[in-house]
Image (cartoon, rainbow, N blue to C red):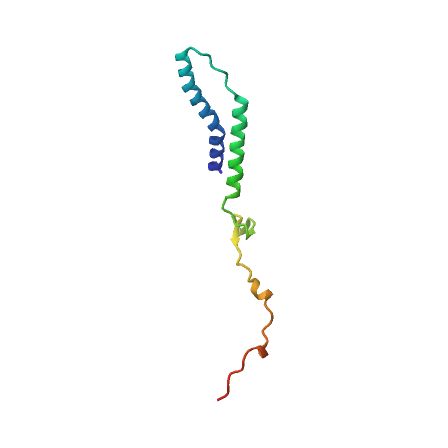
Length: 114
């Protein structure tokens, strides 16, 4: 969970860091030329950071390893100790047995008698 939180914080702060690096570079260039510098567009940086963080949150949530087709066993007591809840894989159901027709012995060729 901490990894996801750190990723969100880094992605939210990335536009600010890039802007301030850009601003430092441009400010040095403009001071040499004697031009003024425009103020920082903080509202745009907050929006861009929020969009990056939200996009990363959604992508990380969709790609997270979970058993989507498993069975959840909730937390319970075993021998006086608490066992954490967990997912277990359930074996896949064989659909071919359900959809096939019953075997008719008359359809198979008879073995020749010798």
